[in-house]
Amino acid sequence: MSTTDAVAFWDRHYAGRPAADNPQPNARLTEIVTGLTPGHALDLGCGAGGDALWLARRGWNVTATDISAVAVERLTTLAQSHGLGDRVDAVRHDLHTSFPSGDFDLICAHYLHTPLDLDRTAVLRAAAHALLPGGRLLVVDHGSAAPWSWDQDADTRYPSPQEVAAGLQLPPQTWTIERADTPRRTATGPDGRTAEVTDHVLLIRRTA
Image (cartoon, rainbow, N blue to C red; front, side, top):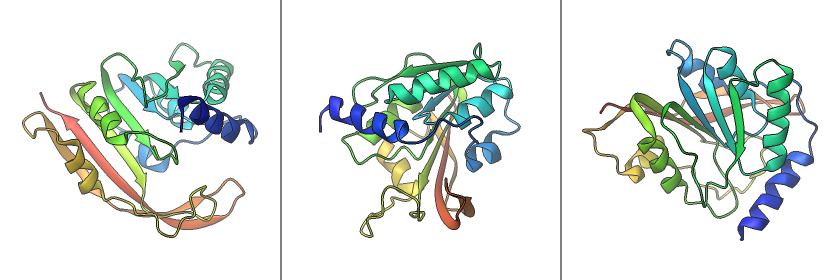
């Protein structure tokens, strides 16, 4: 599928739902990042912007990226309305062809799944290399499908955090795996339904 098709797919995805006034952050972000010293964060696939706004409220300067111009424009407007426009820089990137410039203390990739062409391993490897020494890459993937997920394919396989880490081929002299597990939690969908889901959590720190 072409880049134009991918942009159209995700623009339709976000345009087809109302803009959120106060999108909530992902549970694993608040669990893991609370207590870290704020710095410069990169949010890959920012979507409605709940993670970026949560980080900004806690003193982080956030570069938030998404392939969808709809998502980026909504987040820009939302950050300004919440008085966080100076801390959130929302920019459109198709990670299939480009990666944001800069060095970061924290890079988050929450549920960076797509039915379209994307070399996710290359994206996450680029993210690891964009970390400052001491910086962390947080990758949170689906380990199961929620009832409201767009992907209801029963044959979908969810690689473990250890498999994702191995695929990145990061030398242990420079990067350390701080966490790789598969916790479960109760999630709430956009229509208010709840379901138990599994997350695949990978946290990598750049040590040198």
